[in-house]
Every structure is written in C-alpha cells, then in structure tokens.
Length: 244
Image 1 (tube, one colour):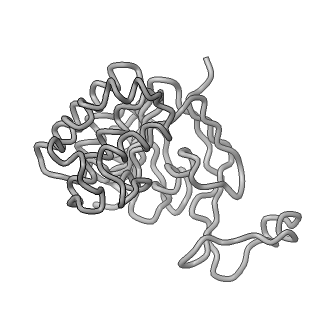
Image 2 (cartoon, rainbow, N blue to C red):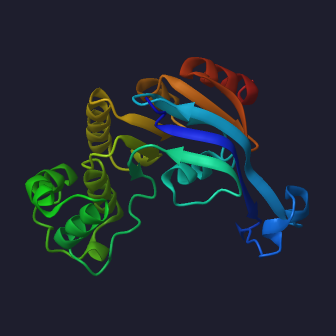
C-alpha cells in the first residue's frame, strides 16, 4: 500500500514580508545563486512519509514552518525544492473560512463549497440538513454569508469540510476557535473520522489535543525536521528545549 503522504527533500523559501519570486534565469541557477538578500528558508531538507490511517501531530514554536508544511501538503503552496506526493484527496481544515463568497447565502455557499470539493448534487442534498444542523445555522440559511458572525462562519466551514469523504484530513488550529460546546462537537467529529480510518495531519499548540488525536509527531525547528517519533517523545523533547 502506498503512503498517504510522501515528502522528500522539501524546501520552501520566502522573502521578508512576502513570498520570494523566481525569474526565468533563477530557474537554471544553483540553490546558492538563487538566494537573495532578505530571503530565508521556511523549510529545508524535510523528508518523511505518512501511512494511511496514521495520526500525525506537527510540533514547534510559531514561525518554525508548521503551517507552511500543511499548506504544501494541501497543495495551496508550491515547494522551491523537493517533492510532496499526496495519494488521495484531502479535506483541508486550514484557513477554513476562505473560499466562501460574502454575497451568497449560507445555502448557496454550502452547495458551492461542497461542489468545488467534488461532492455531487444529490450527495449535497442528502447531507445538507446535517451540515446546517451541525453548524447550528437553522434559520440563517438565506442570510448572506458576509452578515454572519465570525463564530458562525467557522461553524459553517468546519461543518462543510468535515462532511467530505476525502481520506486525508488536514487540521490547522481550527479547534482553538469557537466556544467549548462547539469544540466538543469538533472533537467528536474528528474522533468519528479517525475511527473510519482517515489519515490525520494536525498542527496545534495545544498539547492536550495533540496527545488526544495523534500517535506520532514531527518536531520542526528553524525549518528543519528535528525529530520524528511517538507523539509523547516528540512533545517531551519540545518541552525540554523550550520550557526548561
């Protein structure tokens, strides 16, 4: 069986305050010649594989490349070096309120977003009531998305994306948003997805969440993969490095 995610020699470079851009000449230059003043490597020489059904937690301080790695796996960011291979579709719970259209209603956004992620019309109709119910938006279905509160927007986005049948679930701090009752619903839903054999790739600063959902950890520091091992060992190493 193929790995769910294969990462080899991965590197991505940024300029201060914005992504670095490469000229046609740069494409034929060596890595050292392509470096420019003000540029830095957000990730460099990162390699690992994730097997189907694994639950991986990505650990590290802010600015160490965790969310960048998630975006590379999601395919919304392109690498400057190395490769990322994803064998199967992804349900991306990252920047989850992105992609919704402000002037469209809740109902229209559910159909549009689910459709863009590959859900058929009949499937959307079958799941529609469950999506609205989970998001606690009954009575707001004809409300323009732009008039929803931030909490409502997050609930709607999580509800739609968590209904996708993709085998790989990417989660970036989404559980930190919303009230406790809704977080508990999110926990239960993720537990259900894991019980179905989904693969989880999870970025969080919440040690309790990491220990709850993940069995393996990746520890990133200064863009490098410092440790790949059992989540308890990875968290112990991280805590020893930065909490001593």
